[in-house]
Length: 401
Image (tube, rainbow, N blue to C red; front, side):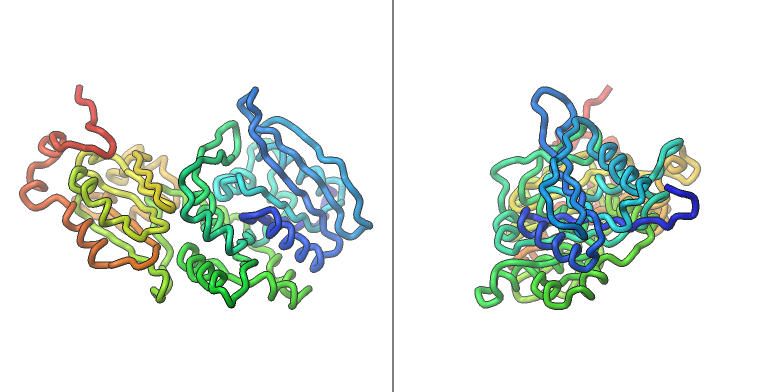
């Protein structure tokens, strides 16, 4: 990029269907007629570790053509960063709209895309960040949020892909958004209202607007959706959300159809009683996420994540100990901040915290079942030696040397 040249603006657009993503991209192009659209697809290559990344670049201010897609096999983050830097160096990219497919795990992918690089160009040298926009087609979203009978691979950068259910993919996209654009399903049949209520609970910090309103208020609405943000602040927010000990955003007030419950405790859970309580706890839950302190794994941060009827509990990290410990020194600033907020002189940062979103949730049933799964006073007094003897049907009993 020439010395003194202004940075470009990078908008990121995703959506739960190609149609809603294309409609949203078209509206941004109307608001910025000289923008460039970089459309991406990522497909697994059965013969190799890395996926095949197809890219197609379209200049919206010129007469439409049929550009030939470019294909490459490799890390999608590296390939797209090179594309974006090349566009800006050539002076062709004042505003780029990066249209990402459904099978991208947005937050870790964007974190890698924007992360500063030592000895290499970073996006911050060439672009300012705009809002992360996620288009949501109401009817497919309401269908996907309960679909757990199959798995789809998603990519977060590198050679790593992860099989996720359509329900998990749908909620991760929503949780990654700075702004949600709701489309499809007429308000008369209630589907759009139901989807909007659920979206407000899944991502209470994101702004939300209908696609019809974006279309009607162009070009002003498109310009609002592409205002510049601090990329470092956005990275900090993404990193905080991806921490295994992340705390939920303040939920909106419960409505007639959708409600959110946040359960917290500073006492460890009995793994066998927790397993027995899952039927009561998960009744009516569409999304839950958080972390546990299991008595059978006293040093482990155990993450809890569900979408639809699929629940995943896994050991993800270690609890931080005293401030002078090596673990504390190597922890991210976001993690240390969270630990300071919740620090207890006896337990350190250990705690349980889970947020549940769903329909017909009974707060007394959910919190009562979880409270009953906590260690009682007698069990708590046994200490680690006694807790090692507890049967753990969730993660299995830890091996002893």
